[in-house]
Length: 581
Image (cartoon, rainbow, N blue to C red; front, side, top):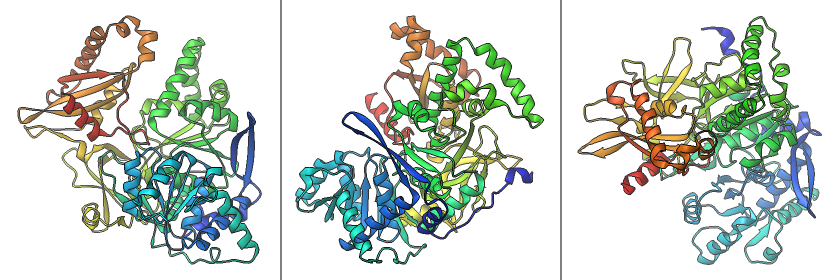
């Protein structure tokens, strides 16, 4: 195998997350770890948080937690992405107890269930959850004894069982000044459970994953060895922090001394890229594909389509002789994304190869990563030396990966082994034994390894449509083709039960804006629109073997049920479709 494609950067390896943060503080103490934005009297204000201040806040909050009797206890966190979330997370795992990050999108009943299942003793929350937490306290439906609000809300002052993070920080700082070292000197067992993290899977019942410091620290080392980060980078924390790649991702950038900022929301991404001069961020395919479509639309609108088509082969040819002028030639496009954007990692699900290639052609390195909550999360990724569109690249340097029991086409289940593999599912030994066998973690993803060593994912094992005649259909394969239709936002291929067999069916979500602008007649006449989409599906069928032919079509403009990382909840969506007939 080409050694260049396996290039590994020399980086420091640490046993636990606390040492990773301490190392960054030692190296980058006066650099900005975070830039925070707030509004005061209608005016926007920015606050710079240095690495030194960041560590002091962690130490103060951790000391306060111990003073409150939370040593070795479980502390849940729920809020939007914000600085206080990160401080709480690290103040918990770096010397206090066990962190339980919760999905901010959960309904009240599931928040309650998660607090109960994890046996959380304390919850730190954004002010938007005050009523929910007051209800939990009143009903005594959880084990929570400490309710801590991230915001300084006056109504909580003096309220039994409630306090604010601000007061905790003040208390912790006073104790530190008096020489309290209970948190600073707390021993860390890197092998023990430090995090209980609920999967954001597409099944209705999320499992609770147990992760250790070693799991997270080893994954940060593996990613740093594959991807080059710089202290001058500005990372936009877009993925939800309760998601493994959200929390591990921000620790990754902190390990490199980068500055971190928070996105104001999906509608403000382009504005935030310009505002903070963002250079790197981790995203999901849905967003990147939407960004790319917008870029291409602007190129057409400005009459630059021909110029871009001429420039692309020229810049590709120059790169072959080690001359890279992409960022100069396509400066207008990069400036529209803030001017500094150099590196995007796409995770959660497969990105359209055309989109990844498109960003790379403009000089913005866009790579596919692959992993699961159970693997802390990254198992494999492309890097600047190993890009093969449609693949997930190579395993990280400290991860072993293979294809288990491949069929005649070389497709089998992807299994992995490494220090980043979870301790197991919390209080669920049966489920743990189902996925960890002889030291190998069974991902549930089907895929193959090509001749050059790149791994490719073909679909989820549980998603495979098995027909009565024994034929297997991988829905993701068909969805990739369907999603290339210009008016399609997303699609779901599934087996509709009929006469003791399954009918290959598809639900298509069409893009109203695209149709209104480009196909106004179809947009106004839903019958004609259905006929158009059905004809396109028939044309796709002609490219497929007979048993893969799609025989039923459902169209809608309503977004499908999704996880917070924008993955379709396949089984919930299929259940809904079948119930609706």
